[in-house]
Image (cartoon, rainbow, N blue to C red):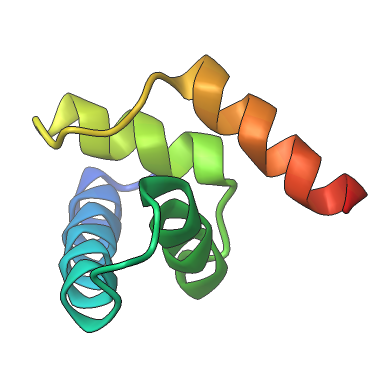
Length: 76
């Protein structure tokens, strides 16, 4: 079943809003921690959040780096 493009656009807008919110609220957090917080808010994986934000022009680390560090947080 195909997803509605309108719903995807709205999801991405909400994701960008949560990203800026967490960046302003927690300026000392690393970018990985912010991506994890946004992923929790949006019920997505941090790598998916990084892909969406990178496509929109945000300065986030590459997806492989995000995957590496988020897997380490689950082990600890």
